Length: 138
Image 1 (cartoon, rainbow, N blue to C red):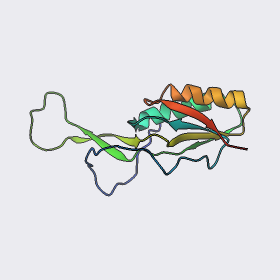
Image 2 (spheres, rainbow, N blue to C red; image 1 turned 120 degrees about the vertical axis):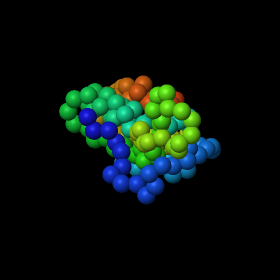
Image 3 (cartoon, one colour; image 1 turned 90 degrees about the vertical axis):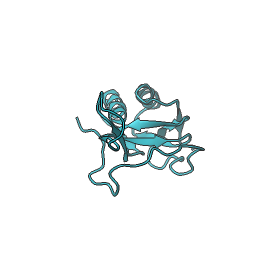
C-alpha cells in the first residue's frame, strides 16, 4: 500500500492556516473526459486519496486511464495520547491536501460513459467532501 506523501519538504511542520474561498487553479478538465470536482472545503489525507484511487481502478477492470490532480503535501501533526500540554508541537502524523470548492480531484478517460460515472461515484464515497462529476464539453 503506497500512501501518497512527499519525499522531501522545505518545512517539516506547517501552520494549520485558513481555507477560504474557492479554487481558481485546477478547475478545468485538462487530461480526461470525466472528472470529480470538489464542492466543499476539507483536508483530504493521503489514505483517503489512495482508497478512492483503488476504488476507481478496481471498477476499471481493463483499459482506461486515471489522473490524480491533487497531492497531499501539508504535514499534519499530532501529540501522543496523555501527553501533557506544552513541550512543543507534536510529530508529523500524516499528510493532507487542503481542498477548496471547484478543484478537480480525479480525471479519467478511455472508458464508456456509464463505467466512468460509476467509477467516479464509488471514489466520491471515499472522499470526505461533497463532490460533483463533470464531463468535458464537446
